[in-house]
Image (tube, rainbow, N blue to C red):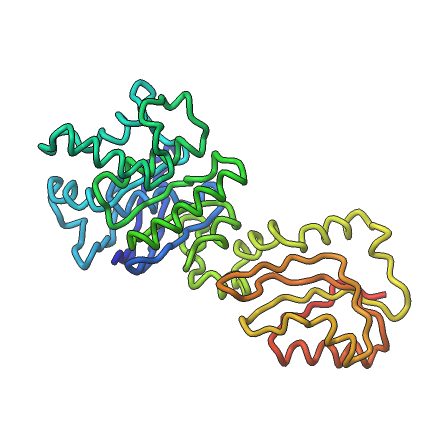
Length: 344
């Protein structure tokens, strides 16, 4: 549905040209939820704005249903933008307008009767779970409710695509979950294609079908969520994984020389990472029974992504050296990533 072909965006800076987006190639399928993740300054917001030409690429093509937007006139681009809704981190609501007024705003000038607009606004507010709040002002709403109003307003033009620019970054974790659940429902009910950018790993894991990882303006890794995060190829992707996993906690204890990591003879610390969707969930008990190796879990972070385990464990393994070696060999045959982190 959306194709970016060799998209670059260069801004003029005080010290010379700044390459915000560098030679990006992406394909976003109709009806999917596509995530773009990166640390601050990675270029992800600029890339998102290139999709609807709020930022016109310096070079490259942006194709929407095989039509290159960069070749259209301004009026033609505006017509396409009606098919692309957008929501933002700070909601961008009109503080002087009620919830009704904010959601009704896109209908201005379309020749609809007041009754038709009111009916459509009520329908949209019911869709986002805000029935009965038409007369409230943004100052009377929570952050999550404001974002729901922003989503309802973005849906007023019945878009086929919804662009989400850090849409949950200003929300607490519980509210973030409710907004992600709403986006998932809109994707399913309306067939809405959703493109979201974030610096939060959990958002990508929770909702996205595929993901692109950005660093310094370039897409350095992309694919389905499980494959990218089960076996990250780039250091920036590994950094995201470590930030939300057990590995960061282990390295902190290692640096602090924690008594927890004082090993006895015959012990070592192993990191086990799930790399494929078919890994046996009863792994620890199986290894203990089969190889006579005691495994004491000291860190664990296993999540279900697309119905399959993603993450891993850090364990203290105790047993004969030969048994531990056989244990490691077996894990490698079933495509579990094994790393010896510390030996006695």
